[in-house]
Length: 263
Image (cartoon, rainbow, N blue to C red; front, side, top):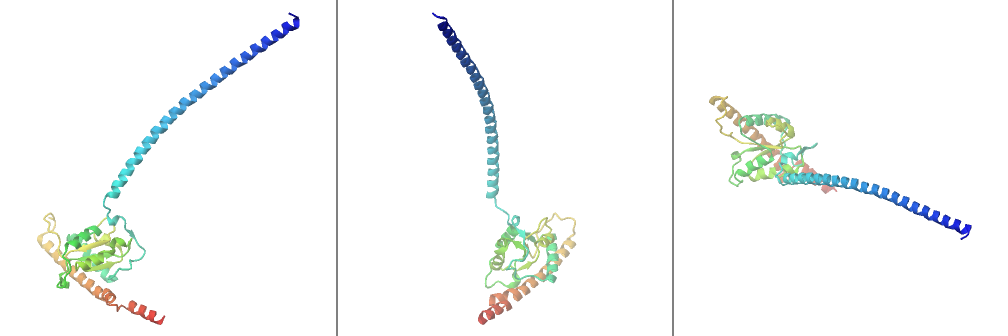
């Protein structure tokens, strides 16, 4: 073997050793990289587990809230809770009491609350009206089973729209007033009230020991006198404001018909 051949063999061997060395280093690098990736995967698994746990907790909370909301929606809603004060009176606020009558009505309501002769709110008044006998042709005007006072500044108007018709069906006189808030104050409630119903006599109760029998009798007589006075006002305003509409003789109706003829 010549010197050149020996040198070639040595160089080939060195190249082979270098290649094997490079391969072993690359394998080590790959192992280290793969080790790092494995570590990251473990961290991701932990994060994923935490996220899933958090998602389950949020989902259970949302389901609980949805169940509560469904129960609330299934429960009967008090119309008073959805009423908002309106800037204008409802268009069917007839008969409407004048300013002088307003004062008498508020005084009567305060006496009625003291005398326990009052129903408050849409649901309670509706039940009380329905318990009264339905109107018949033989029913006399003086035999009214109560008096309903309705606030005209109601929104949405659907909350009280049925009350006038219900009152007419059961021969219960009614009057509209301008303020729901003032009606609530007069009725001695903590919130504004859409409607109250006044009865001719109060509930019998033996718990009120502060007043003597004479005071109770006097208070009941004062209330009944004020009740009859406001009842007359309601009938008077009905004749003046509602009857002309029923007969078609109201000045606004006459003016409307004349304007139509001119066109």
